[in-house]
Length: 163
Image 1: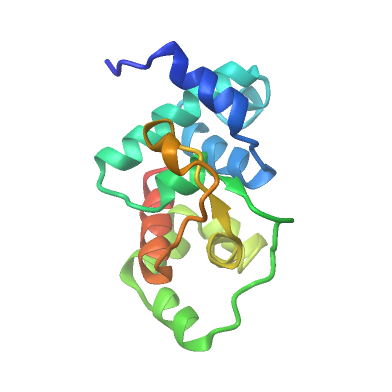
Image 2: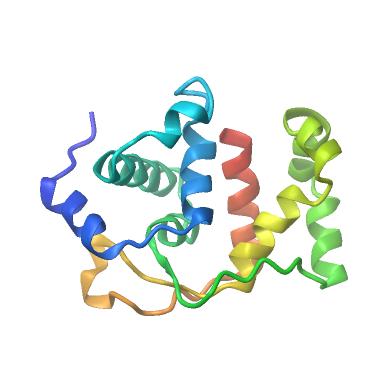
C-alpha cells in the first residue's frame, strides 16, 4: 500500500495543468487495469491526480529519472507535435531491440494504422520544454526539466512496454 498524503494530491490539483499528452500517458498506462480507455475518460480531477501520483511513484521505483518529472510537470509553451528529424537519433531508436519488440508484437496493430505513433510520442517528449511540478521538489517549482534525449527515449519505450 502506498501512503499518499492528502496534501500531495491537493498540490497537484492546484499546480499541475495536464495537457492531452499527459492524460494520454496516464490513460495508456492504466487502460488494461480499467478494461480499456472508455472508463478512464470518466474520472474526476482528484481521481486523475491520484492515478498520476501512483504512476509517478511507480516510475520512480523502477529507477526512471525524467519520465516521472515530465508526467507531473507542465508544458512550458504550446505543445509541439513535430516529429524528430535527426536521422541518427531515429535510427538508434528504430534499431533498438525494445522498439522492434514493441512494433512487431505489442503495438503491431497501432503501427499498421499509424507507423510513427511511438516515434511521435518520443518527439513530443524531446521537442517540448516541461517545467517542474513535484510535491517533493517544491523549491524548484516551475524550473525547466533538463533531459537527456537518449535516456528519455529509453524510459518511454520501457513505459510503453509496461503499459
